[in-house]
Image 1 (cartoon, helix red, strand yellow):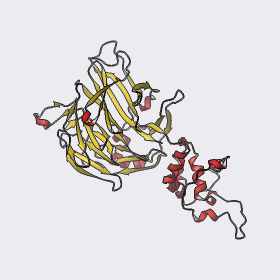
Image 2: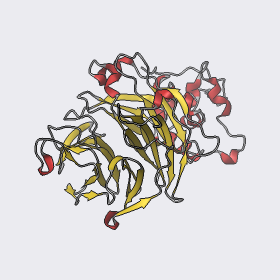
Image 3: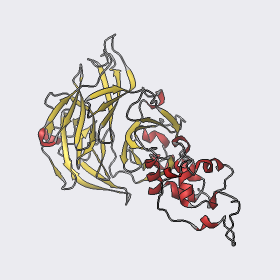
Image 4: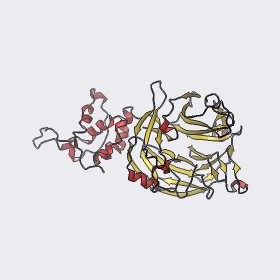
Amino acid sequence: MAAESCHSRSFSWLVKSCVPADPGRHISVPVPISSAAAAGISAAGVTEPAAHIDALPDDLLLECLARVPRASLPPLPAVCRRFADLLASDAFLHLRRARGQLRPSLLFLSLPDRGSGGSFSQALLPLPLQPENQVQVTSLPLPQTLLLQCGGGGGAGFFSHARAVFLPPRSVFLVTGRGANNLRVDAVTGGGFARACARTLFPRKKFAAAAVGGRIYVAGGSARTGAVEEYDPAADAWRVVAECPRRRYGCVGAGAGGVFYVAGGVAVSGSGGGSDGHVCAAGSVDALHVASGAWARPRALPAGGCVVGACGVGEHLYVVASHAVELSFWRLQGRGGWVALEPPPMPRGAVGIGMAVRVAMAGIGRGTVAAVVSAAAVRGGASATASAFEGMVLVYDVAGGKWSRAPDLPPGFRRAACAGVEC
């Protein structure tokens, strides 16, 4: 727990660069000035040496905090309550953004298996891609009590199939769907403001999840319910808002233009007019207009295939589909229908008969699509020339219409949950 006051011996380095060398570059942020601002002024109006960092006014302390490298931010909220309040403020984000220290990024959260004894870590890939850009790996300090609270006694293993959803301006939610509390972390400070959140109403696995209009929506991943759940972060509560046209398992989700999309997977438990078996729904997309609660007419990919990844960028839905021997890439433009785009560049032999392809996608800003691609041989089904790999990161520039290959993920992150953030 953060202390009431913050002493300066361990953090005196913050003060060294609190005032820019060029006064014209000083960025003014309107923040309330606490009573501690006057602690270094005597009754006669003479400035006296400050005993600790509490003597700094809020605006000057914010200047210091805004200059801290992101890798050093996670432990700072625990220093004292004042640090925590300032780091959580809109003024802190304003300063970081004004100084060019907030940029679109792809955030990965490593999720250790149950009983592995590993710890959470995070990796960050700044965008747009530059030759010097590398995946930046840091620890994500989370109290064991918090992990147990989220894991229902099972610990971090409950996050092994979690979906990462970003809610601007700074919250990343790990939705487990496993009958345990979900986890909320801060995209800017890492685990600095981590806390447990309400669990979904129904247990799910391999489900669809996405953010639309400041709320989170989940669907699929269960044969027992076709309910679409909505999460209100202000109330920390879930509620059922709709019923899916079909119950899907192994589906993916995306949000764009006020619509929650549920794509791919198989329809189960007789939904969609089938029997009690599994009905193929791999190439179809269901779309829920969240404001009205109405479902649009299902949209199927014109070339068939299985939707293996989806995300929203701006007003449009982007999907990657597998066609047994190749991948395709599509954009859904509302009533304009599907538009075929340049397919993701894949290593030779990576996609073929007997290969299972897994794609995690995230939209970053309004002009970038990121895809983390892994391919593995199905037992007894792949040829000797098959190329199995994990953690290949591809970035698509919407304006330029081209894919670029980013640095591959480290081994510990190749099955990580990912989200597009600004941090």
